[in-house]
Length: 157
Length: 115
Image: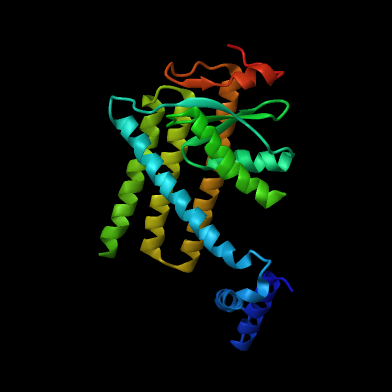
């Protein structure tokens, strides 16, 4: 049984033992079940279910932090007469091939505050990205290729 | 105490929303304006909704607040992408300090942007 199915069963068991299947008892059961599976981690060696929660929380915190930082720099640019932004349009070479991979990657780039995917070549070899604060275009390309694209390809292949 | 936290959230949310609107007028070109309206706008709405859910603090309001924030995060970048793509394909002039590294686009694309 996969860890997720186990977790669902544990949630149901908790809810029924608590006398009634409702949303609050199901959620409590799910959280407690996650704790149980976390303790039993050695049984699920080949599954990423346990680390998924931490990875997700890390990603959300990183995302909120980026959103706040880039909002503050935009605010500074709007309010002061000096424009200190260094915008750039950069064609990033793609290793992603299928429609799904390219879509997920382009959406991730757009979702990350500070960069916006603008266009893609007809042969899908390059993704055109507009970023607001770029000091070194090559470093920016490597950041997208080694950070986001690698993660997307690992998740989807 | 609770009231002051709520008002800090809502006032700073309003501040960022106003910045997003002002940015649409102040910033130099289309793509940078898209950055301003998506980022500062999303943060503004997020802070206001957070303040409201702290104020009411019922599960229904919190569930709706989570929905509002996640849909804002999902839809704003897509809209910005489409507007930016339309501007790029039409060949809208960009700010003269923009670093252009789009040679690959011009060579490979069959639909060349007209400049």
